[in-house]
Amino acid sequence: MQNTRRLLDIMAQLRHPETGCPWDLQQDFASLIPYTLEEAYEVAEAAERGDSEELREELGDLLLQVVFHSRIAEERGLFDFESVADAIAAKLVRRHPHVFGEADFATDEERHQFWEDSKRIEREEKGKARPDESVLGQIPRELPALMTAQKLQKRAARHGFDWPDIDQVFDKLHEELDELKAAHAARDEDNMREELGDLLFVIANLARHMDVDAEACLRGCNAKFIRRFGHIERRVAEHGKTLTDHSLEELDAYWNEARRMDKAARNAASPAGRGDRDG
Image 1 (spheres, rainbow, N blue to C red):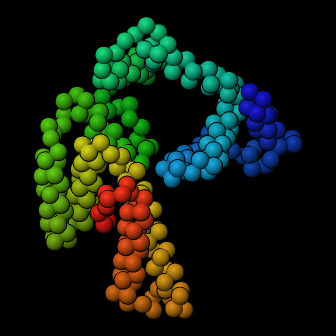
Image 2: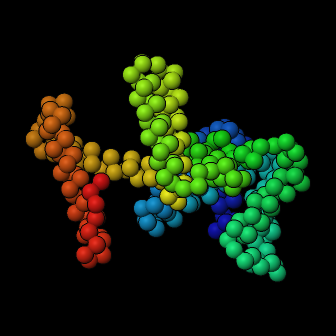
Image 3: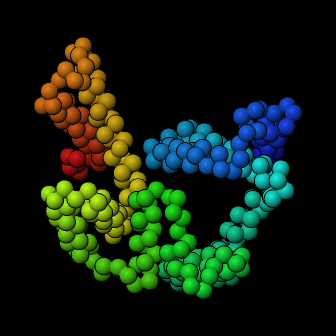
């Protein structure tokens, strides 16, 4: 606990009204939101890359946000870091009676249902749940849109509102794509936006049926695009030119070089004889 105490003392000094840092003193709960979200995403990125050293550093940055919020709350007489730690510890024990108690869940579904029931009961005890509240009401709207879509669909499916198999999701995907094409052909901008949203929502549902994280898939695709476009920029620089000096066909040839490099790297990392598909 020595390092934790040191961190809390440092934050207290940064927030000292006379000798603290002017920037730190200016912050409040609302102003810290962008930093908290950014740090959470950077933790996710480091974890996905498997970079343990960077993950350790990013977790520290995220912990700083917890300490920062807790310090502001303590100054306002609301709560402190110790009460935050105590609350989450108590919640973990309460929601894991099969580990810390005598409960015995026969299936993962029973365990998950207990978790959901516990969350509902906790909300009711705190007066945050209404009798007429939607089953979708507990999902934060501040999450990224793809993540929110999957959570909405998962919650609805848990109550019986879902396609029974993935083939019907593929059918819906084609249906929404055709509707988007029709809206585009009609130059109906409002309808195009709506149909594009419907298409993205179905794609998120498709990811859920495949048991993959749509948000993580898109982050991976973004990283791949950045990597391949970086190859294009390096090849362009080798010729002493700029991107606009090259034709689309030339740039596309560099892109295909990057694709082949990615495929070779994947094959090298795959088990012998497994091979890989181009992407």
